[in-house]
Image (cartoon, rainbow, N blue to C red; front, side):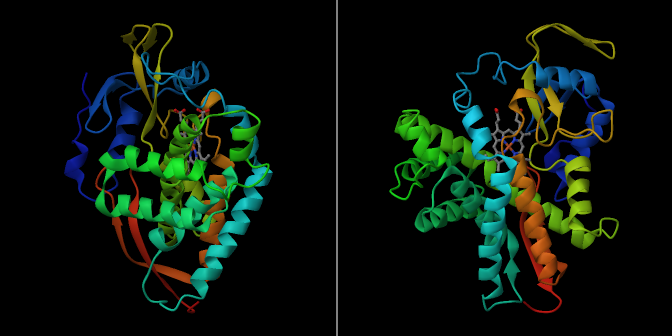
Length: 338
Ligand code: HEM
C-alpha cells in the first residue's frame, strides 16, 4: 500500500510535516513512500513504536557500522545532566542576550543567525568543556553558511575539520568532558573528532530550529500565549527537525493486518502516534536524546528572554522547503526597543 499524498517538494513553504504527520495518523503499519524519507512501514502504533525504540541494539539499520556513541553514552549523560545543563544554558543565554541588547541595529534582527545558532553552538561547546571564542565563532559561521547555502553535501568533511580543531584546542577546560575523554578514557583524536561531529550535528541546528519554531508559534498563534505553551505545542503536535526515527525489527510484526518479517526497517514518527499526548521528539528507550535537558532550557530560556526584551511580532521569515523541517530565518520587531 502506498501513501496517497503529495511528494514534499510540491508543498512549497507550507509546513512540510503537515503531510508527514497526516500520513502517520492514517497509515499505521502500512508502507509509506515519501520523498526524502524513503519507503518504510510506519510504526505509528504507540505500542509498536515503543517496542522498537526500547528493544534497541544501538544500530538504526541492520548493516550499520559500530555506533561511536556506545562507548561514551553514560559519560555524555553525566556531562549533559539536567542540573549542569540548566546552569550552562543560563550563562550562555545571558551572555548572548546582553550582546544583542547592546547591538545598535534594533530594527533588523535576524534571530536564527544572530541569536539562536550562536546560543546553541556555544552551549554545546561549553557543555563539552571547551571555552574558545575563536572556535565558537567558527562553529557558528559554519552552521550559518550551511543554512544560507544549503551546503549539506559538504557537511561531513567540513564538520570533521572543525571537530578536529575543537578536540585539539588548547582551551579545553580541565576536568571537562573532552579532557576526561582524552586523559582518563584515553580516546584518540580520531575517535573524539568523530564523536564531536555527531554531537555538532545532533546539538546545534536542532536547538536553533526548535527555538525559532517556538518563537514563531508564540508570536503568530494567539492560542499559545506563553513560551511554555508554544514549546509544548511545537514538540507535541508539530514535527521539529526529525520526521521520525529508524529501527530494524528483531522479530516478525503484524500491524493492522500488515505482516512485516524480522529485520524490517521501520519508520517511527516522532509525533502523531495513536495517543495524542505521546511524542518521540527526543526519542525513547536506551537511545533517547542525551541533550534533551539542555535543549529545553536553551529553547525556553531564549524565548523567555525575547519576551522580556519586548519582542512583539514576526516581520519576516523563511521556511525550509526540504527536511529538516524548520525556519531558515526569523526577523522580529521589538515593541519597546531593547
Ligand atoms: C531540539 C533539540 C534536539 C532534538 C529535537 C533532539 C532529538 C533527538 C532524538 C529524537 C534522538 C533519538 C535518536 C534515535 O533514537 O535514533 C536524539 C538522540 C541524541 N541526541 Fe538529541 N536532540 C536535540 C538536541 C540535542 C543536543 C543539544 C544534544 C547534545 C549533546 C543531543 C545529543 C543527542 C545524542 C548524543 C543522541 C544519541 C543518544 C544515543 O544514541 O544514546 N541532542 N536526539
